Image 1 (cartoon, rainbow, N blue to C red):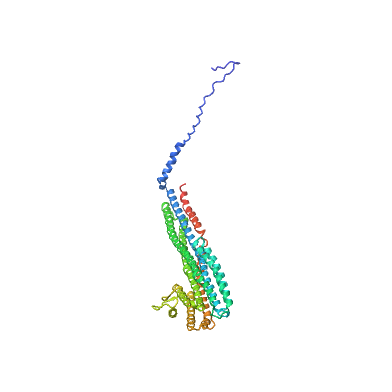
Image 2: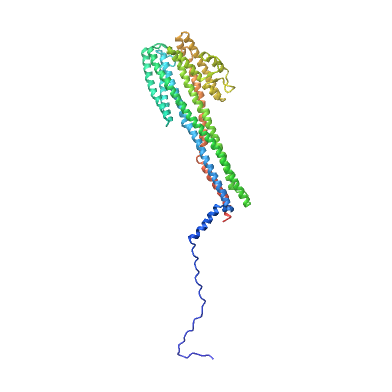
Length: 517
């Protein structure tokens, strides 16, 4: 039976139905204290130090890449330094000190010819048409003086911070001013006397002696020393720089070989480990490194050759021939001095012989060294000489040139110079014969070209010597031009090539490393 509550009584709700309890919130993991992180970092450092990372393939690949990059940076460094040395040597020999030293040779020549023109002016006296003429001799004198001033300025620039060289240049400039004053006095006396050719009054002779002694005993030796010292500086710079270039070539070859070996080792490791074909990027990097090494070493070899040619075939010969020209002009002036100053005739004859021997010293055997035997030996030795064929039977400036002569234009120019020099010496022999026989006026006429070709023959010799010098100047200019052209653009080539090689290496290993991600 069902019981119902009585009506009117309130209904009380029963207890709520039971529900499962909600789970407690998950506890957050406690943060690792800093004291616990340090052991982990220390463990990684220990792993790196002990080389455990090398036991992994990515670690080994990274090692290969790092070694390759280090080697490439080393190749970049040695190539940059070597090319810098090559550029410095070309700049020194071809553009700076080399041309300036040649200009100092002009100083010696200009001073020598200044005194030669003064001797000719005094010798011809009132006959202004003898020789090349009074007016032309005076014009040449003024031109040589201007050349001497310009050469002295260049010598001062070349001296730089060298106190001894600067002092010598200053002494030459000061002495040149004194010389000009003495020459002015001698010429004034010469005009006042109005003497016949070759018959100078004692006061004119004494005034000229003061001037020419200053030139010969002070100015010319100092000018010659300036050229010698400056030339020695260039030669030392040449030896240092060329040695550095050749040493740099060796370092480039060795460093390039190391780069190639490392790249090949990397390529073989990847091919063996992943059993795949060679990486095209690494192949390109290897070929690029080979090309950079070969081209760099070849460039340095070529630069060393250009520098050597510029120095030996150009600079040395130009400097040597400029001395020969200056001494030849001074010797030719000694003929005038021999005639205008009888009191010193023997001295001027000996100085003429000494200067001639410095230009060409023929083998005269056991005979005494005098002008007579010199002339005979010169005819004999030069008559049998063939440029570039067999031994050279004479010494001196032109003897050194003959030993280094090359066939072609240079040999032809040398033969013309030697032939012209023989004619000059034959004219000297005839002039001295006339003077020794007491025919002083005849000797003056012969020397000044009135009854001979003496002036014209010496001009032909001077022109031949200048042509020979021009051959070496062309060789010098060509070598420097080739050297400059070979170095053009090489400021950027090493760095750009190294960057390309580095990119190719990263591209070559990128896909292999990506397989481990």
